[in-house]
Every structure is written in C-alpha cells, then in structure tokens.
Image 1: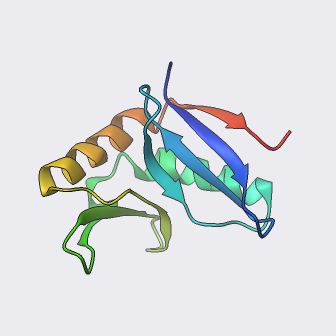
Image 2: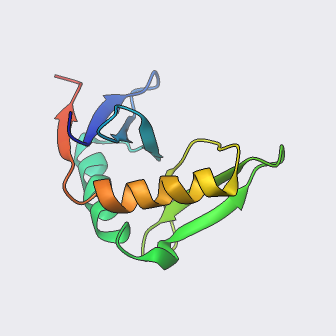
Length: 111
C-alpha cells in the first residue's frame, strides 16, 4: 500500500484528513475544515510545508510525551502527530511526513 490522505467527515459535519504511511499508520491528522474544498487545500499545504524543516514544531505534552505540529507559512497549524514515547519516535514521524506527504494519493471517504 502506498501513502495516502484519507479525507473524512467528523461527527459535527466538518472535514479533516489523516496522512497514512504505506504501512497504514496515521502519521498526521489535520485540523478541522468547514468545507471539503478547504480540506483539500489543507492537503496541498501539507505537501508544500512538509519539505520545510522549520515548519515542524516539536512539542511535549503535559504527560511528557513528544509530538509535533506542522505549521503553514502563516504560522497556523495544519496538522498534528500522535503522541510518541520518545523524541526519536517523534523525529522518525517527522521524517515519515517529509517523505510521504508530497506524493501520497487522496482517498475521499465521504462519497
């Protein structure tokens, strides 16, 4: 299986997407969007910004679990990773987004 973006609708009717690696693991979950068109623009933004290391904000949760947030050029969050057990795991997640985001196909799971 190749990397892909799954576009979904949340229970409140908003759209979001998950970027999944070739192994099916979710490596990035987007913010919520009011329209599908905006969610698709969000995917384009991930593809663009994933190539820029400075756009990854490395963070630690209140429970001391590392994670990252991918930000757009304007500083707004585009997506967030899962919580990792180590900084090394988080950094591997960033590398996976950088590698997989540009060429991943889009699957619209709303149709």
